[in-house]
Length: 230
Image (cartoon, rainbow, N blue to C red; front, side):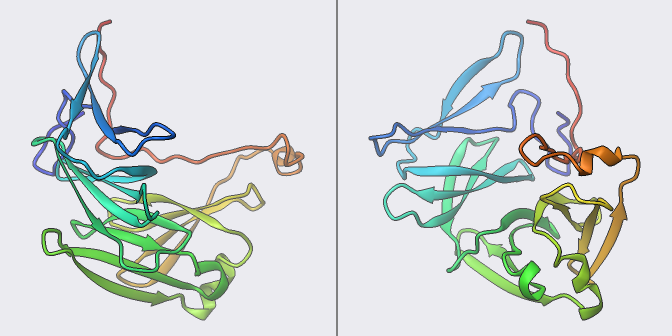
């Protein structure tokens, strides 16, 4: 991994953070994996005593890993930050009520929760931006799609796959249907751009859903491959 002024992950730590939650316990343990020959796990944030269940929604910005989680007791949705350099954890509660379709994104250098739960039904998205972490200050921006673009989102549900270098949210259909395309949502201009993908074999679209499974991943511009001797 590159360590640059833009705030990438240091080379000696991996991106992922693990929380071990025994089924009948309220204790959370957090570990990072040290990238070195042989590799090793290292426990961090031992004094952080708030148990929570991490989700798969995460984003890394300026050497800080953010992820959504639920508290063990009340199932309250929270945003957790892990400072990779200081190895400190902290959390703030999400503004209520969070939707069922969320994504964490980098919004102009600030971490934000992109709520597109109502995108398919009425073209509405909510953007909750963390303005001040210590003061737990959020700002809200609500967007409605232009009526002429509603046809792009009403035929199926979408999954958010991060953002482009220009900050556009990437939305990928959950189902493989022709013609297959993904959308780039410019939150500044409130505009969708359709990008069609060609070359997919026709028989893929007619396969029984029981056998058909697919995913689309986009390479983060900060990612690279590093060889480690075992």
